[in-house]
Image 1 (cartoon, rainbow, N blue to C red):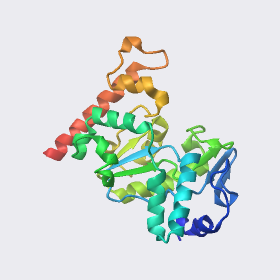
Image 2 (tube, rainbow, N blue to C red):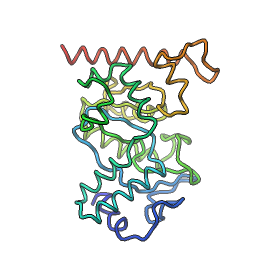
Image 3 (tube, one colour):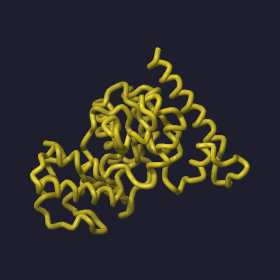
Image 4 (cartoon, rainbow, N blue to C red):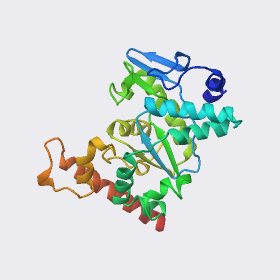
Length: 261
């Protein structure tokens, strides 16, 4: 029995308010010290994907949106598979980060690698070739707050198990030609961990983009060549960004050459 099937009856029948500050205790999957992991329907995998956008973990808002959409779809008579898919698609990556992500992917040539004009099409006409996921599939909270990468995912048993089980399963399902874009260094560490296990090849991993969050505006501007090095604040290390941009551009260019050979 899948996790979604296991929890679907509770999602439909419960009078719980998913919009509350805390998710219902019935959805609690594990506890480890100050860490709590809850179930929310993020199980769906788009097996036709050519590129995967991967965050750290769904936050509280995403979890609530997924649970409410799953409840709505199930009550409307949707199948388990359809309700699961709709819940994931409704709650996944969106909002103000999207334009930053599109701009950076286009900047390194990812659109050409995917055979599209712009990575903006991943959110419109070519949404069928992108899969959204998280290093930690199910929402994790630290002392009730959204988990942000601390403590280390690989250093905590319940978090590492999510990576070794769920993220590993997704990589194996999606195949050896899929590309992965980890959002931030914490997520990149999870993929490098699975790469060392032989689950994906180095060329599949497009690591090094600044996180597309608005809080990273200066790093993003510099990555895109919109801000001069001399005008950067002390919080931004231009050498790290220069190296990442150079390596990413070279990797994408090499992959395009291989696919056109």
